[in-house]
Amino acid sequence: MLPRDLSVAAELLLLLVCVQRLHGSALSAVSSYEFRAYRMQQFNLVQRKHGCRGAIVVAEARSADEPVLTRRCVIMKVLDFTTEKYLEAQKQSAAAILILLPKNISAIPHDTVQSFMVSESEALLKETLMPVYVVPEDEQLLYMYEEVKQAAATRTSSIFVRVLRSMVTATAFQILVSNNVPIKGITDNIITTLEGVLPGAGEDVPTVVITAHYDSYGLAPWLSYGADSNGSGVTILLELARLFQKLFSNPSTRPPYHLMFSLTGGGKYNFLGTKRWIEDNLDHAESSLLHDNVAFVLCLDTLANSDELYMHVSRPPKPDTPMQSFIQQLEEVVSSRFPWVKVGLVHKKINLVESTVAWEHERYSLRRIPSFTLSRLEDPKSELRGSILDTMSQVDYRKMKRNGIIIAEALARYMYNLSDKISPKDVQVFKGQLDFHDSRMSSLMSFLTSVPRATQLLDKEPSHILLVNSLEHEFKRYLQQVHRHAYRQDRRDPDITFFDQMNQPIVMYRVKPAAFDLFLGGCIAAYLGIVYYTIQNFDYLYTKLKAAVKSKHD
Image (tube, rainbow, N blue to C red; front, side, top):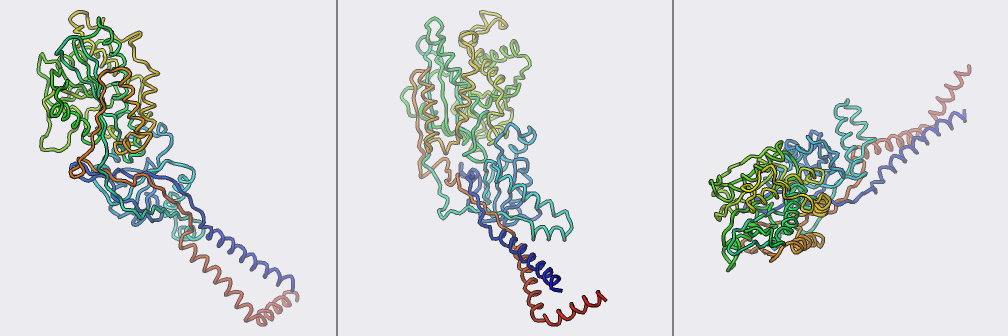
């Protein structure tokens, strides 16, 4: 009898140990993980508010597949982030959205990239009170994602399975972003524009202006590297400066044109740097090349891919004008050397009622300066013009080099009037020592995408300031009369207001859900009840047990 009693006691003891072990795992809500995340854009532009206005998050993590998201932090991968899910999270008053960004962007399928870019662009059009953060993936965050994804999948199981899993095996994740300092507006940003000139042969000769904006844009400023838009335009401009410097440095090959280059800031925010630079040259400077005989202004924008080139104009060029002549030369270069490339002219009138412009050339057109934008994009509202997925994986160096050659050959034909002297098919200026250098273009793109070039960062962070200084150094290597224009806004009436707290530490806590505590409490209560009942009725239980054993032996 005694061994049997000991066996029962051992089973009870084992139950107690198991419960204690479960309880120990619950108490190890000690588990926490801190990482850095980047908040969605927040800015006011011409009286319109964009981006998320909130930063604080105290909520439990949930998958986007869950039916109820109210007061939850929704965890998404790039694949999950769609306009529909974003709007659903807003509709349900989700506490926040946390987007996991893969380290290898090039591994994301093309369709997924396009879908994300569209959703990203639409999310930035309006404001939201819901905090939105983006964070690079790591092992801990992927584990959290899989756990909340698996928890969401169990809702298709039976009620018993869902409850049992939730009580015993599920792990909950609490996301915490706490900051006692309110979000503050920033209106003292400095927007820098660089300019340089290659003086032509003769006096009072026309000026051709080549320009590109160098800043980037995307859902989160700290993750906006802008490889195609507009690192490609900057790279081609710098290579044009290097090649034409060789031609202009020799008096025998110096054309009767000034060639002016400019890199402008604030391009992603209504081209504010271009606006201020034009105002300085036309309204405040005593003498400027923009004051005099400007043949045309060529703006370079998003040129690192595709077999299409579009020339965007505010007014169709008139016959026998310099701009019409250059466009004709560009079309001849394409038809004679790159016939598979589609070239198109896109005419879009400037809507004077609108407070924003679509392309950089519109800033010049408003001042009646002949200008156009050359881009691989037909639609100015294309999602490709601003995305955190616009990285080096979006760049086709072969096509970017080809686009640079087309521009260079067309410029040479126009400024040297080569089409009247040589058959178009025989003209090839940029070859040999004047060829585009693959290694230089690659290194320029790598340098430009080494740090995010969001406008609100370029005058604040040391590494970003260094980037602008390096661009100025490139100008001084090849150009003359290099000037750096730093424009500070009027704080009383700023064109644009940025906001701080774009780079936040987030703490993730691993905890057992409340249902687990209820389950654990029930187990302990049941155990204690059994022990109490056994002690109170020991004589009765012993007698019954003894009689049962005796009858079995009989």
